[in-house]
Image 1 (spheres, rainbow, N blue to C red):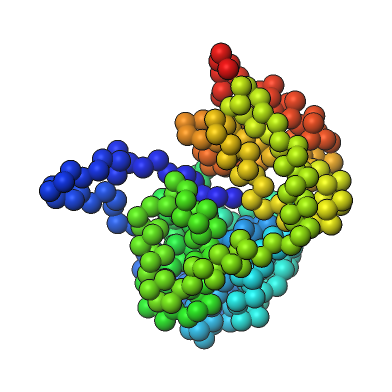
Image 2 (image 1 turned 120 degrees about the vertical axis):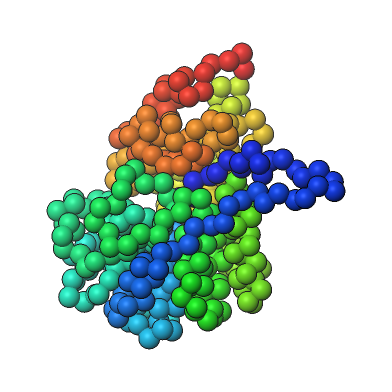
Length: 365
Ligand SMILES: [Mn+2]
């Protein structure tokens, strides 16, 4: 999921007048605490885990950190839980054979690791959302968290936290960690960290593309990071089956509320007919909101288990999160999601449209 979109501060919206001293519009980014770095660097055997169904940021941040720790002589594994979109698999190829699946908390044997690092999420509940807290509570090795999502409350059980909700991506934060550790950046680190940053910023196009984010990316490019190469792998390497699936899904786009709301379906039947896999649908959610005048968009995806996952995008000031929270979901202001118990996209859409009046009041349109 893309990161918390940030509204630019009032200061950054004011262009400096000609001849005036240019103001410093952004405060310096948060750096990891020395104790956090010591904890990270002193572990010998480290397991790095991103959130369930890891996206480009979770994978890139994990691999970037893993490569650095590996070069420091640590035993490192990147663990993943859930499915990975085909266009982001290259990020794992860049790691030195350090990846394996961890589909359940029991796969993390306590005696095997000195430390677990959760990246792009705040802990085990985001890695194994289908497992009850009893399955991991008190059973994991000590763990650190590196994350840019907004947390609901303090994280009591982690042994160290590097948290910056203003960071564009966890990849940007890992770049800060590696600099603080005086790591010599290698091509696999540069590629995976850039892949993380561009994944969460829509290739430097979204509101979270801050000056700090661009500076961090520029630092990585200066060291030899190849943005064009990352773009080719991430956005120019889709399968024909994925395009067939996109075509079927786009064919279902419909508009409501005078064009302010757009919805699109992705059914299991379409996945089967196209020969694609569900994870090929990465990026589909952005199409309905890309239409002029659309303030809120929803992609309804049958999850293959009799429910419908609803991914929302909105334009400021409409809050996708407020809509998602109304249905028991959550997320960021402009990008959020919830699961609808309806067996079909059409039923889930009716429920969605029925609950919009509080967020998107009826107007003349
Ligand atoms: Mn992220």
